[in-house]
Length: 432
Image (cartoon, rainbow, N blue to C red; front, side, top):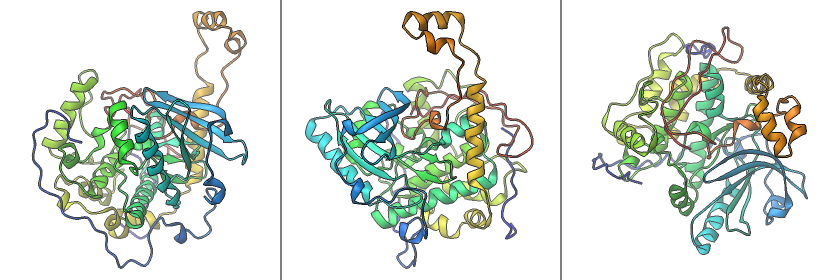
């Protein structure tokens, strides 16, 4: 690969029950200690202006009555996500309400554990404004609002991501993971497209990393799990290190590159639905060879090589996030490649808004139903385009997805490349 970087190509479109499997014990994943700078650390970010500095004013105790709801972003069985404004400071935030089935003292411990997120100051990590319990005992998290939304929704709506943008995504993700682990000894533990968010300035950030073991355990009882992105050693219940996050990044990047989840097959839509389908998929992840990036002129060989390294079944052979960030040829090429991510992000918002604006009008029966419920004015007016990309959803809930496999047309590029995108609705096995 020449030093000029990438060409802007896009491809055309805890132990799970029942698994009695063995895995080689992973080696320790201690990062090297001699590095002068930590990628993603706020102190190395120079004139970072993408988010508000989290200072004393954002360490005050947030209260439910201080938050003005501006827009509902999504809802699932486990909770809701809303765009809100803090009344006193006028700061716009994303508020996540998580329904936790646990004793009050456990919920209080969750809130205390979440406070470590105040210490995570990085341009690659979504800023945290606070956590508290409401009067019904739900855990409330307030985070930086990312107006374009998640990579899951971008990929689902617009197909495969072009390679130069994919390089910047990989660079940001590995920088964020390295920062979390080297500075805070935190493993993310839930890397997937819906936990990588984008804003209209083109910033790419991680959210929903595993700072709270209590919350992780409680959510596992509430939500459909995201075991489909887990490394084989985690699915088997073996000891794991930060290298397990690298496996999840490999699956995520391949999904963004090809436009569908790498495991499974296109004919498994219905069969892969439900708990048994998920169990079968987990067995496939553990027992079958890791997927490989398909051969395509759109994919440089260094991308194929990096994903292959991420998806090594033996964690001892897998690199750490820091090793990839510092020395992998694909990441080094991504660092050299100038990409206007702000232009790309804004184009995603504009295309989303056009799709919303061009949505078919409500049927007469639906309008009649709305009128009968007192919504005559809303039903009789044309649907307007949203003013931001918030309807893409925020990470962690993957609103209204249901398990299953699906495929999309992958015959076109996005973000200024020739061709048109013809995505078909996608079902995903992750469930959340």
